[in-house]
Length: 424
Image (cartoon, rainbow, N blue to C red; front, top):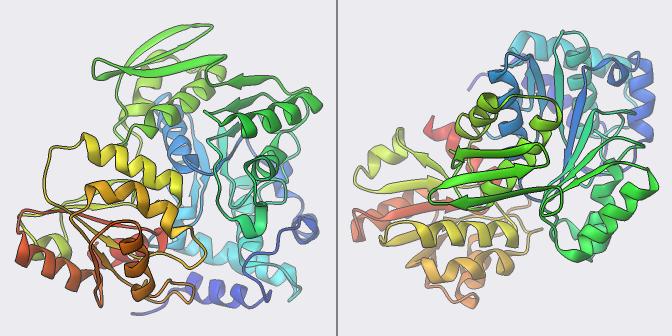
């Protein structure tokens, strides 16, 4: 495959720092200052942190804002198939020419000094956003919040903290309270903060941080309520009630994500019809995404094939609930995970719904958990499990046994990204 110009620059950027993750804001401030501080020239910013649901919440907010006629910048990570997915400029994925030019500019201005890949590419996103008119900017935190590269906007319009759970302990702390403290680091003085459903230990930390900054709080269960009723979704806050369709993004957890998104939209003055569009038109790939075309589906025409990139215990619980609500069908998992994840915590909720798990290593990922270890972890979680050399081989074995199987490819966004690239 021919490498694009942006691929070449991105590869050079990977070599600018010995670590992939090194949480500090010093390098960001230095490069942003050299670039003319584009982070201070953005349209009103909605900054989103949390362990689960950040991307889905952002996607719903974007769908609502765009339906109301607004031009929206959006920044997310990681990408699945192409880096361009991370940077959406005024509603459109950044073009190859624009991406290459802005990456080159940031690389040249940085002048070879230490900076991580995520930091310098975040600077590039800010530069692209600052140079294109828009009405809003949606920023998704990469990791944590307090020291994340996105946390350089001094006065956002809103901050949002989606559900916090245990993940990335090596960077954020070993307790829920410690991790919540890192997420709450995005809260700014007197800037309203929308809080999704939280365990008490996390909520206490987030609310205390908001109080220190005199930030008004809009918390789930206190200031807004959302629930499924009779196959629809009912949302209520102090301004009234919305009776809406269920979110088009699948899973019970998307109800609370939609609640946070609707709270943001209502705070911004977005009318009810556009709030409905937020929950019916949002697009977010590799979150219980049904694959309907491509080489994988062609090889298993009678099977039902799903793709999900969730990778922590909370994601495992959410997928478990969704599988429990689906019509009964023989269900098989094809799973690959990184060696930094709590694989037992992820797999245990899924054990009751899987007839068999096929473990794969994630191609091209140095941090992949070897297929053998994934299979052992699945067996320890109570599943029948075996290894496969790749996803296609696993799928072939499944459909040879059960042609009309339900197959869920899961465990990592990196595995999901590879599937989307190859199956596109």
